[in-house]
Amino acid sequence: SMRYKTDAIIAAIIYMACKEEQYPRTFKEIARETNIVEKEIRKYYRTVNKLLERQDMRTSAADLVVCADSPDHVWMCDV
Image (tube, rainbow, N blue to C red; front, top):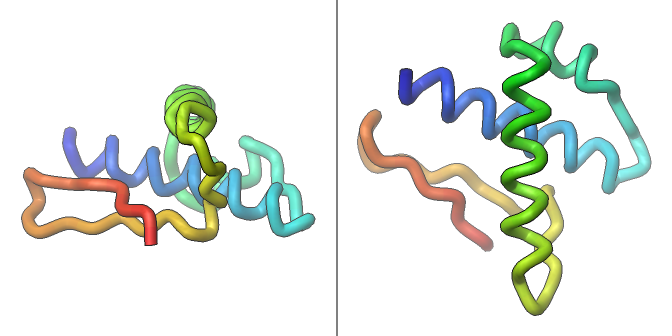
């Protein structure tokens, strides 16, 4: 479902932000706390990481905000 996908992306960003802020957590820990399957977090971590690497200027995970104007439309916004 769209909600589960959104939650998995958020979980991946939480994983990234913890790592960047020198407070690393394992995928297993994030999965346990978010009730998202670890495999899904890993999948979206790779996807988000690839997107960020393509940018000329690296965006930190802490700067990512998930913006939603409805349950059917979700964007990751760089702020």
